[in-house]
Image (tube, rainbow, N blue to C red; front, side, top):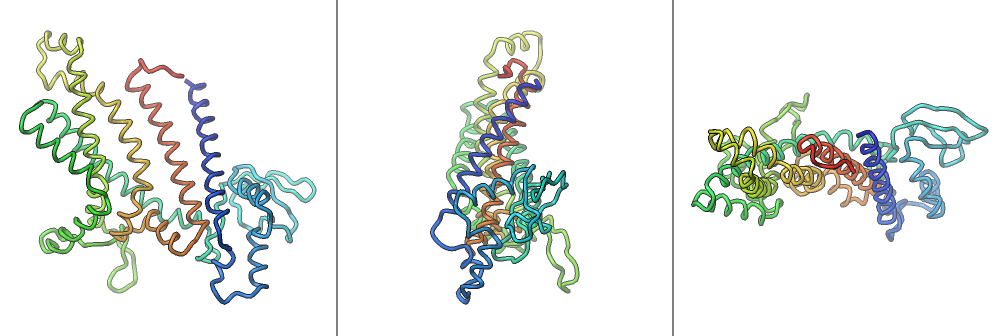
Length: 357
């Protein structure tokens, strides 16, 4: 088991290294001068030179890439010379292990650098402020999809080929075919505007909102309802279809026939034997959807004005804030990899027949 986990971690690190490299090539080799993006149209050559020196933009591409990896690595090296780009100057959060000559070795959290537009604000702080809101939204959406999807899938399997089954299939197909951003607009208009007096919901709003006097932030759970429903529609349709098909396949196995022969009812057979064994494909779908929700929430968060990492990415794209975009993509990729590792371990728990390879 330990060797299996270590092998998965090794694959994860290689994948993450590939993601880091691709992101660097995509964002740091694009046309345009990041220094000009930060200063706007009224910059002077001296200001441009100072900014390029501060962020290492005056170095070669290869050197910038090595600095990029050095900042992201948990163990990194930096110069004690204040004139050098790698001088700490409080940018790292960690422990100074030892110093040899003018080079210090650090054990630290990955440094995602500073925002181009929010001067002096670390990208890690920006992500730390917005990622929890996105995680809450994604968890709420996947919970809606799981609970309703599993129930609908079981009902559909129990009433195979009946009008109930066909109705659930139609609803599932419609849920899959409608893009999330379109659903968000429809839901916001109908339930947040047209039916506002009955639902009490608003067209937009985040988890925390300032009160009318501008003195304190208050938790607004009702603002979670519409974006969670919209984000959960597509995975709900997938979960429902997969649960139906998987349960029907399991119900045809010999051990299910044996369970019926022992006098168990259909509900007892599903509860004790079939349900757990039918969950494997559902977990695969849920893991993929949950990870993709962190990225797919971009448009939903923007439409509902939900203060999450998706909305932050849209604003960063509009202002060409490359460090924020890079940091957000790296965090989402890391979470995606971690979720996949967890899912592989859950497979082993659900089905001991799965080999640890």
